[in-house]
Length: 461
Image 1 (tube, rainbow, N blue to C red):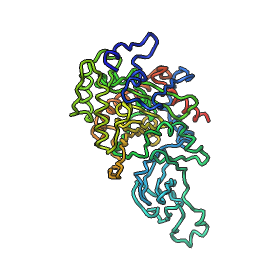
Image 2 (image 1 turned 45 degrees about the vertical axis):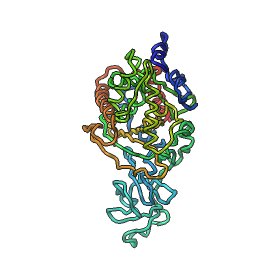
Image 3 (image 1 turned 90 degrees about the vertical axis):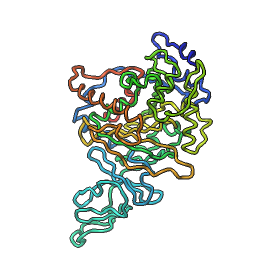
Image 4 (image 1 turned 120 degrees about the horizontal axis):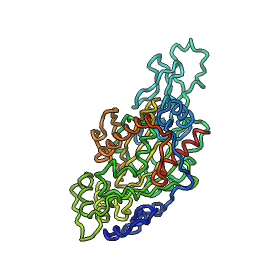
């Protein structure tokens, strides 16, 4: 779409701003796959306020732990983090703690992280072991969860070694992620994922590896952190530096009929914000190169009146193809430059695209309803010859540390710092607010409302 065409695509009163995502995708020289040409605006979600107690009430948090976190499928780690037998991580949510371990070349199990003798945590961090030995008295279990050693066995004749096994949570795999579920009667992961696998068929996440992973203790409820990253309405105010190249107000939001756990948004890049008005293509390119190290140094020359999106996509295809050793010549513009963010209830936000390979995860920080853990992962394409690096350890940031100080995040760290500043103010503001609920936009915050509808379904079960 040329600059002139973009300028003529004006919204009528009562309509969303133009050009829409689909307007732009229809003009791209490299067409997007059918799954991205699908549009599904939310229907029938209502417009009532969301009660503010959900964001700071201890009673609500305690119910969430019981009715949500102990019932839903949630990501514990990536498969490449535990590649060898004996490798494991410790996954914690509220009071729960699991040892997620590779117990055989093709088997991953999740054991409740507590000694059956006196309740001592068997592991406080991940690593590699050939057995799980309690550091207090020495009770020991094999990687298969079977009891292998009882200290002073003569004094524990009432223990049946065949049944004194480590309890397990359910484990499922998808897209290179290891999912766990504490509920022994839960629905299958395949059912829980709903449409997500079909939407990622053309972009298999199992062919990616974790190239960076930063986790930060956040000064807000986990739902507030989550909600800030599943809408683009805030971008022109919270991230004004991006307005020349991010189409924030014309973001497409998809809530699919009958789908409980999955929603989506597509935000255009290389297209200026509707709030900004006319912006030259040269200015869009200049500001993208200023803010995004990925484009810095690329030689992008535009013909008079030419929109920058095509040239930016060409540069992205060439650069990503060279670094990954893959031929991306037929990959759509959308998949190499736009933000294509999916959400899987309750807390995972994987992005579907070569140009912005981000994944977010959000969860409570212990049992404090006004603190949380937010994680940003970068999932790069694996080298076909297997030469890609091993996943790095998690970089942990305290509540007063900046995202931008962490290695590997690039411009995403600066943007996350801007959001964190606002999230701290929101958490404080909800405490002083006289209105009993927050008010959401019908379309641009429809993913937040869909999230709360699903949350209510679990809380009322």
